Amino acid sequence: MTLKTKTLSVVLGALIVTLIAAACGGATTSDIIATSAAANRIENDNATRQAIIDAGGNPDTDREVAVGTGSRAELQRISTDATSTALSFASPTPTATVLVINVPEGPTLTDADNPIVQIENLGIFVPDILKVKVGTTVTWENGRRSASSVKSDADAAEQFDSDAFSKGTFDKEPARFSHTFMILGCHKYASLYSGDSGTGAVCVVE
Image (cartoon, rainbow, N blue to C red; front, side, top):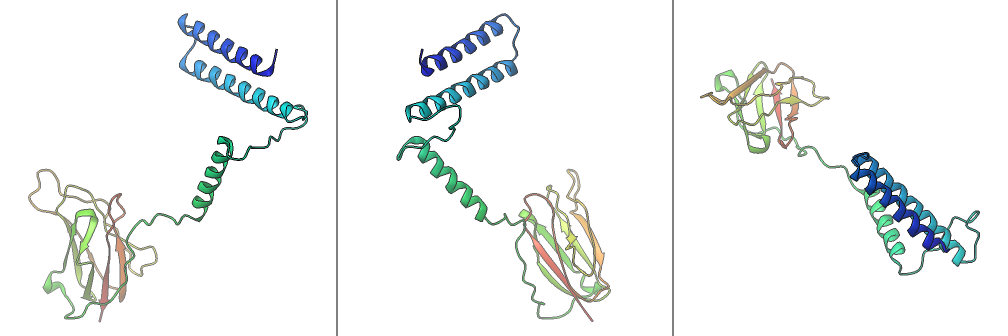
């Protein structure tokens, strides 16, 4: 009996046993999957042994099998190698838009100006950059049902974090978060919620 015949017998035998057990209610789905996997391993091992024998080798000591040029095995190996190479050079997915800070021209806002930043779709901040006088309170408004947040960058000199806030189902006014800026400099922030891509900055001057 050749290895191919033996392989077929083993696989068929395993499947028959599995089907009988399942019909009798003695096997679970996990049992069937495990049995099929074991049969596949036996089939693959026997096919490898037969390939080594056909090539004139010893299946008990030689486990490397040459892959034929243009064979499905070679094409699969080429595809796998190409995918691995592409993944190794893939750049990480950005989590937010990079914001280049330019201090806005024009007057410096104060509390009397009531500076407000609107949070629009995708968590975009409008305006994305504010210039305020030290001691000014800035308010962010979210009139959407979707939650957003306002959190300073980890390296920002002034730290603030709104946590999640959104307009409630029966609320007539948008949800708000406010922070009073006391440290000079441009303080970057972003929304950390999935789907939000907006970043912003508050530039505090004398």
